[in-house]
Amino acid sequence: MILRALALCGGLAGASGLSQYPEFSQQYLQRLAGQVDALDVVVADFEASAFRAGLTRSQALAELTGTPFLSDRQADMRRTFRRHAVLTDNLSALRDASPLGRIIMPQRIADPATFAATWSDFRPALPLTFAGLVSGLAGLALGWAIVRMLLGLILTPVRRTRMPRAHPRAPAGHRTEPAVVRPAAAPHVPPVPRLSGVRRDTPT
Image 1: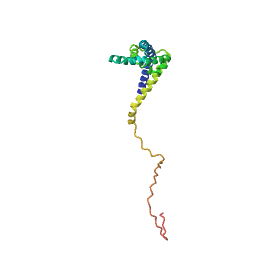
Image 2: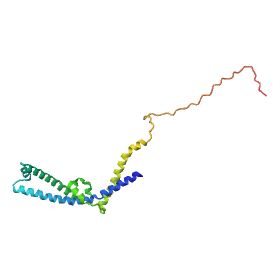
Image 3: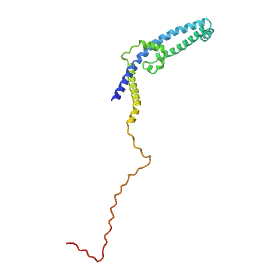
Image 4: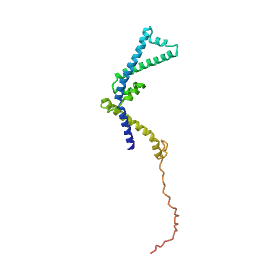
């Protein structure tokens, strides 16, 4: 009874947590779009400056050398370009996916800055959408299964110590015959000798 109650608590916790995922992913998507828009401006400005100088992006980055400041600026711009590429790809994938499809795409909701900003403003709400209902049911099943598995791992050694020792079994193929108990032999009574010619009188 206690194990079922704990498993039910785990299922309810999983349901309440996962049911918020569709709404959280939607708010994350909105903030991600803002991040990509801001990076678009930085990337476009750098490429425009490189174009006016008759350089490509790679050539313009290579020009940022010679002093510690320029080297640091080059490293900053390389990080900006990598971040812009990753976030743009994630934004495209999340926009193409449905709210339920985003459940299997947690790797697309992994930018630390965007995640932290979304989480700071997120307020849990009652899931009234179909995606929220399905997510809640999935969280219920997942939480139940995880708690049951953990409790099974914890209690297995305890159950083994309480189990009585089993008697050793005979090897396979070996048949044990029941012991045959023989009846005790009757005591030996010496025969009475018969006397020839002697008549026994029968008592009257």
